[in-house]
Amino acid sequence: MISCVIIEDLKVASDYLAKCCIKSGEVELKGSFPDVHQALEFLNQNTVDVLFLDVEMPGATGFELLDNLTYSPKVILTTSKEEYAYNAFQYNVADFLKKPFTYKRFTEALEKVTGKTEKSLVGNTVNHLFIKSDGKLIRLNNDDILFIESLGDYVRFVTSNKKYVTHNTIKNLEDKVNKECFMKVHRSYIINLQKIDDIRENDLFINGIEIPISKSLRADVMKRLTIL
Amino acid sequence: MKHQPGDKKFIFDENIDKEFIYSLYEDDYTYITEVFYSCLESVNEGIPVLHHAFELGDVLMVKQAAHKLKPVFGFTGLLNQQDTIGIFENVCVNISAIDVVKNEFEELMNQIIRGRNILEKEGKRLQQFTGNHS
Image 1: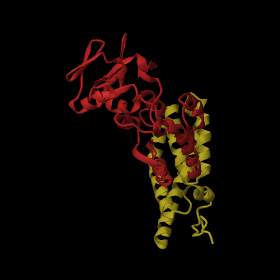
Image 2: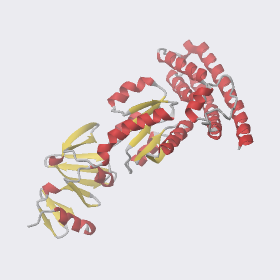
Image 3: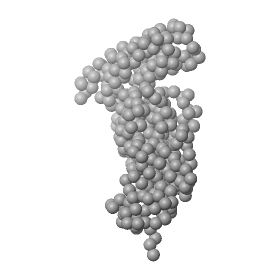
């Protein structure tokens, strides 16, 4: 099942989309929101595979939502204006549904997304990630990241020579990072397993920085180490 | 014999593109009724917003308010209304003062009100129809 949310202020369109999702049997609808603000609140705490996203909504546009999202779900734009096609291309939108659309057209859009999401559903194995910081997308190689630290609604990516703060949570990142390299060792920390210098009791050290290990996760951490 | 959408005939108002309606909802008349009522509500909410925007003389606001009403008519097969709004939106792109499109706005409002009245009438008829066939 693909998880999705609908972000659409027009009730009839939102209800119709929800009906299409249910009819497909392939989509689990996690929520439906009439504006960007409410959607962001949800999406910053929960990850989904697909957004059905209207563009013109009260308060902020669908593109502004994409600018503020800290991860990149697949996006299907639902709008009644074709002139957004250029922006859609820029934002790597998977498809563009002009309202009102038939169920057949909906399933075509879904097929595009299904093809695209297959990779993410089997897990992230890429050697880099992009984070949004200081108004831009910054590429960080997995090798360069020492650890990721929670700052409440934000996280800090720590590399050997720089720190980047971005709006996200450890809970959200846990599913997004490459699990071959990274591991959650504490509710506030995800570490790069290759960067551990030493472990003492319930703490580990990376570049001289002490990081706590949760009691509940300690056994899992030890399993991931090659201990001779 | 295979059941085709529209077998259990409801005779839509001639201004409504019934083929388009069936392409969206097949012959789920209960849902079609819900759609009509939901759209009527949206139009009733949207009309004062559009009027207000025009009175303020805010071209962008007028364009946005009109844009919001466009798919409402689309979802109910009132494609003339949908097209009229689309044309009006395009006109608004190239103007800086709303007075320039005063006549077009009046025509737009007439179309919207006409559409609203059809929605209201058809919503009631659909409700009666689904009541009789349930």
